[in-house]
Image 1 (cartoon, rainbow, N blue to C red):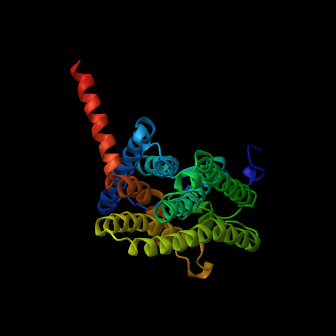
Image 2 (cartoon, rainbow, N blue to C red):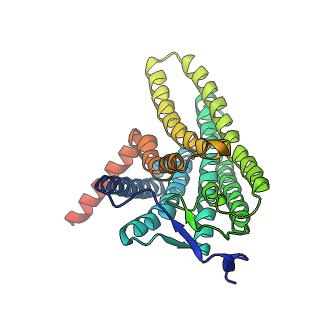
Image 3 (tube, rainbow, N blue to C red):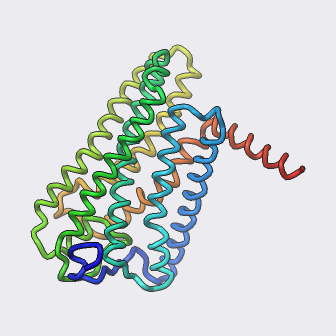
Length: 315
């Protein structure tokens, strides 16, 4: 019977993918692989910098390291399998492989959504209550915030994975997507999925709308605090930081809400595949660039690291 109760009902699935073998798609596939490589290098580099440089041992950078870890796992969960299928021409994925991909994907997107919301709250405390910041964002609080993001994300992932994998699949095996995503898989189930659709919607409201409302509220308060600042330099710096954070957040939540919070009759597989690229590959690449490379402290840590490497190679 294998790992899943319904493994006998279907040997696996065929992922139709996003690319055909045409010349244009070959260029697009190469572009996705470049983005994947940048995402991989950017996030690994950021994690290493944050853990090795003592100046970056602050709550904001701790959360950034967690975000990078989530992004790293997210791209590695999806892109290597997509690339292997495209390059080999084999488009299959096993039943268990599909379940594992759903579990990781939902867990990581859910955790990242919650973490982005709590990071906005962290910025709100830092800008609006700078004197109380060390108490309000103590090490214990930071660990609780990161821990709860991971815990709720993983719980959501397990619920959706078990629910999706316990449905019977006896019709078509063709998933019109480049990875196993729950809405694409539900179309193949030969059972009434209305209860699961409701569960999925409830999970997504909690994992997406709740943190998104925290972000909107936090940034509204931040904007109020920034506009009250006397120093034009401080105002400019705070606005630059907030605008770049909001860009990353809008991409992530916009794409995720488009996929999960739309009524079923408005869904088109071609739209879903394009939009999924945003938060599976593009956001993980942009996050380290947006949150860090525009940041003086991170660039300082990078220079220090490079200097250390140069000194080490001379000896």
